[in-house]
Image 1 (cartoon, one colour):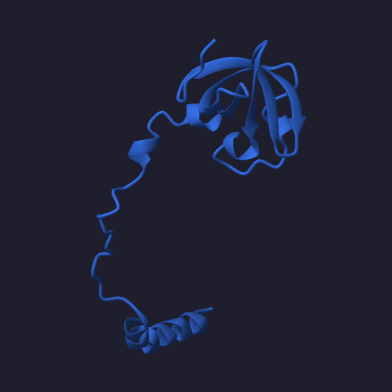
Image 2 (tube, helix red, strand yellow):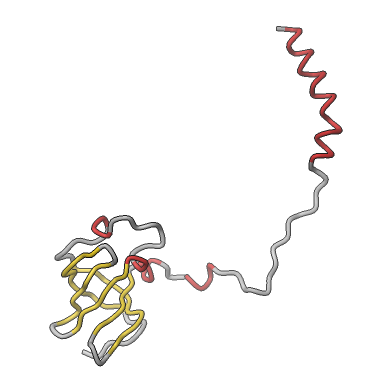
Length: 123
């Protein structure tokens, strides 16, 4: 079967190593889900996500046709709108102007101390 980058396919997990999970796509084609392609979050233990014998749906992110090997991703399928999550590079976020800071704290400090002392006197 000819495979293409970006294609979603099913395969069977045949092995797990600390760096990734091996997947058989068909009799002649295998692939690897690298640990960085398991989840967007931190992955300490791949076997918490997949087990040997599991049938998984993955996305092909690279394919070497001469070796019949694919680089696969689970997390790419969990991000249907991945492009919309990123802001364009030319937009700059700015903070609204405000008049708070250490000088405003210093201006109120005597008042707050006085109020606190009055509160202690009542107790």
